[in-house]
Length: 149
Image 1: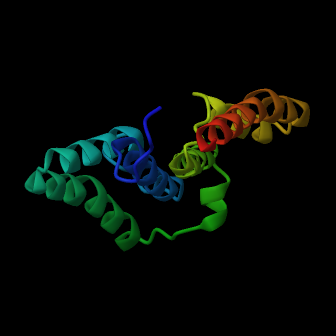
Image 2: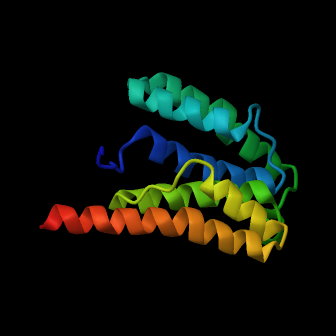
Image 3: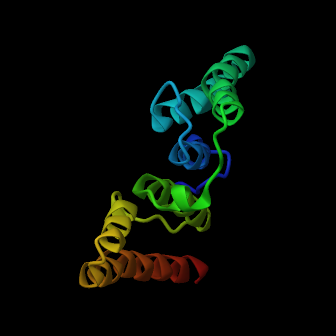
């Protein structure tokens, strides 16, 4: 299994998308979907395109933020945290942080957890935590224990 690196493109993208999603939830209109925009920023950064990343940041991030706030837009925490996309983005960023330890959740786990909480389906949440997160955690702990001996 490949060790997770804080400099990995996936981790950087999840953090960038989470930040952009928070602003999008307050009403900032970006020219592209925040996931696409995050991918473009990380790709430009990885390719070393300094001018490309500056161009993307100015036209796709800074201008929309400036236009929003100069037009009287206000940052509202209740608006941010009332949206499912914000929680999904935060969940992806947290999953990427947890992956720093080597513990990687199966694909789609964050989505399932967030949607179960949104629907207030507590039995589904318990089921996901036990069957998906729990079994992955047990497997991860056994692998760590085996690698120490």
